[in-house]
Image (cartoon, rainbow, N blue to C red):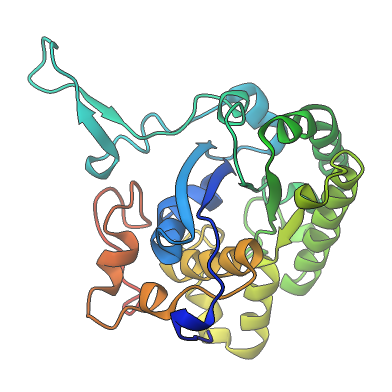
Length: 284
C-alpha cells in the first residue's frame, strides 16, 4: 500500500454506499470494515441487503437474511421504550429487500453473485438477465454506479466446484463472468458516471497465490471459501481502489497506535470467530 500526505490528495465528497450480496460480504462485516478503513472523509453512510448463499437472482426474491446473524450486541441501534420486555433492541440488519434498499439515493452499489454463478454459463446467463430486467431500472432510479466484487476462487474444491479446475482456471472463469455482467449493464446505464466497474478481489487473491502461497492460505476461513480477516481486509483495500481510485489513508488502514483490530473490527456485527469477538490478523 502506498501512502501520501493528506495535503497532497484532492478532497472528495463522502460517498453513500449500498451492499448487495451474500456471506462473502457479511463475513467480518465488510460494510462496516470498509467504512472504518475508508474513514468519514470518504464514506458517509452504508446500508445493505445480504443473505447467506444468495445469488443476484435469489436475493431479489428472498430478500434480507440477516435477522439472526446480525442479532448481536454491535448491531444494536437503540432500545425501544414502552415494551413489556426489559429490553427490546432494534438491530442494524439492513434493508428488507433489494427494492427497498435501492429506493434511496446511492453513489455506489457494491454487489456480488454466488461465487460459482459467474463461472458457470447457465447461472451467468440468468444473472445477466436479472441485471438487465430488474437491477438496471433500480440503478437508474437510485443513481448509483454498480461495483461488482469479483470474489476469489475457493482455496480447495469444496461445494461441488472440482469441475471448475485449478485456482487459476476458476479465477479466469470468474473474470469472464463478471466482464459479461458489466457488458450487459453498460447498455442499460448510458450515463458516464454510472458505468459499472469490477473490484478485482479474485485477481488480488490469485496474485498472492502465485507470489506468497503461505499468505494466500491465510486469506480463507477453515471452510476454504469464506474470507478470513486477512481476506476481508484485502477485499476492503481493493474496494477502496475501485471506488475512490486511490489507496486508503495509511493512518486509517494501518493505524500505528496498537489498536488495529479494534479500529477495523471493533464494531463488526459478525466475524469469522463468531459474534462479538474481534478478529486478529496476526494470529490466523
